[in-house]
Length: 150
Image (cartoon, helix red, strand yellow):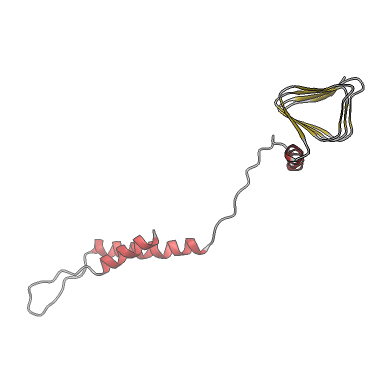
């Protein structure tokens, strides 16, 4: 844009003034509209250079107050994406005879725990139900769902 405005000013500056056929070579003054256009282009050039000198504006963070707190979201993401996590989509049950020695992450389903989980449990858009002798040694976090014991 700056180059376009500069080219426009240079083209207008090189346009010849009207001459009369008088032998003394007197010239008519430039038209007021042409002078206004030249001044406007110069102002535009100076204004755009001031705007670019300010540098980029910092990004604005818009935060939904109903959103999950950042530390919890980071913890859920860490557990869900860890290589040692058992990931399940849909409903899943950990039986009474079963001991899971790792983190468990469930997406869009219900996790029923009647056995043992020695790691953390993370549920996204689902619920955790800990029944009878079921145990979770780590934390149990549900985003978009509930954690209940029966």
